[in-house]
Image (cartoon, rainbow, N blue to C red; front, side, top):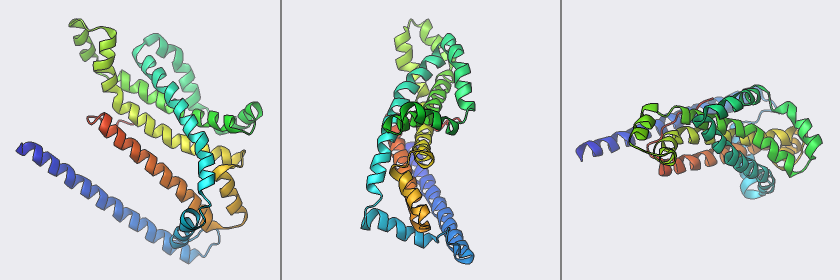
Length: 266
């Protein structure tokens, strides 16, 4: 009991120290931004206080950001869900089966090496300017990282545990349920977090480059009017959404797999 209480106290102290460090770093970042922007007096770089004022207007006063965010999030949600549905099973299969891994490995390397942005015009030509092209682009950004991390998680499971289970007569289904999937869960969640970040990046990139809709259209509109405070405020709104989603995923990870630790790859 004393050891458990001491461990909980140690974790609380570590969490408090981590939050203190984050607050100090953020305060320094804000101070440097504010002072630098005031000294430069550049119309294209607002001060931090101007950005915060623009964020308050966009989110709470006019609500201008909500409809574009809703439009953009349609592609984000559909594309990310498709990436998860395809990426996790393929990663599990490639990690457990050598011939599937050999079959997929060249294509995984190709997708990792080829930049996605040059593929956007091809997607637009093939699928048009609607939701489908935006969803496919989000999938291209997120899918590969979920697959790779899942595969790595399966391959990092201790082979001696599998051999021991087989020696005691465990079948393949039991090995999956008791050893492989629990051992791969940390890497799977790491891939989900990385994939989510990439999905948000893909959502914004396609709207900025070719499909002027959602938050991309809002950014282009404010940039065209030289409203730098609103441009930065829109970007900040996207960052806030990303932080909220990643934090929610970490909460789910702690509930589903309290033993998991961060083993993110890539």
